[in-house]
Image 1: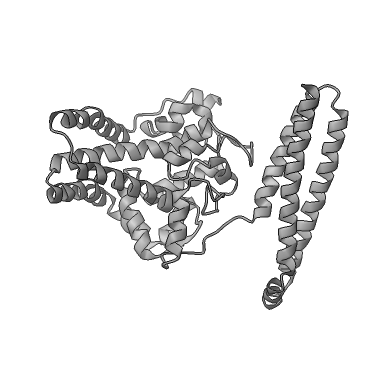
Image 2: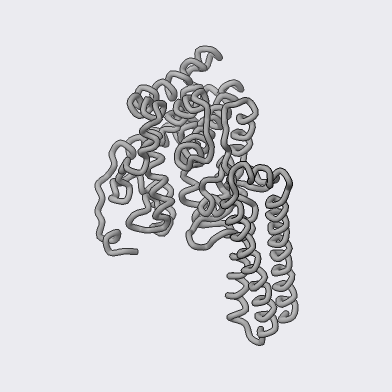
Length: 381
């Protein structure tokens, strides 16, 4: 850890500290007390679950994938919905949240610049970075100038406090009057929902940078963690996200639990979302195979009598580079074509077929590397 961080004595962020004390205090004392004393109606629990889900989706689909990373475009109706329920999460304005998150991606793991660097400890990356006014957490809107042109973003920024009260007190109060359980709604659909949403979001900054796999890159601490993907609306596929942040998906396989992805895709069928950005399969395969090579090379370098296996791996590596060169040539050909010619050629399946063949070759190579390392493991067992 750098000397500047070690010597840093940041003052308390009283706004955040009081907010955490009040919401957590109510959640761990009044919520169970009221439940044991009076009990909660079924409608109150349903409201808690539904509003927790909606609030979380406003953060993952709106604050994160839409505004922080521009992974897709959204209709004004959906953006207003995100702005309202994002404010209900009590995680600051769109501008503040996105500015900090963009800094996190740009300086990931830098203990001096990353607002919630995982290298400063689990507590710091989970909550500690908000409780004190660290220099790394200072907001500079220079990196969100595009968002400052969004009237909905600026409307939320201007009226954030009244929106927060309306969503966190007004909505539960209205539901309580409708279903006849005002205090129950305020406690569950209000306070407990806020605390739940907070920690679900914070898990991504902390646990998703500590436990899990790194199939795409090990150049940062981000991990893929299927269990926490289930808890966080699909955000747990964090290793993928950190290398391909503009993809509207975090879980790229059909079986990956990523309800945010499904929601965004579903909205596209009714015109609420468009221009859903994805990363080409070849680039994803390329990252995976690169990591396979790296790990295989590291393992063989530490082993004895591994010359045979190293030679086989080097041959695979040569094939890998040949495929990368072919991909680069295909990309160059694609760029050189005029728009009309490209469209015609694409329709005739020329370049597209070439891409598919390269993707399949990478997949086959990935399987060969796995088999090679399995044979090596068996030979030394």
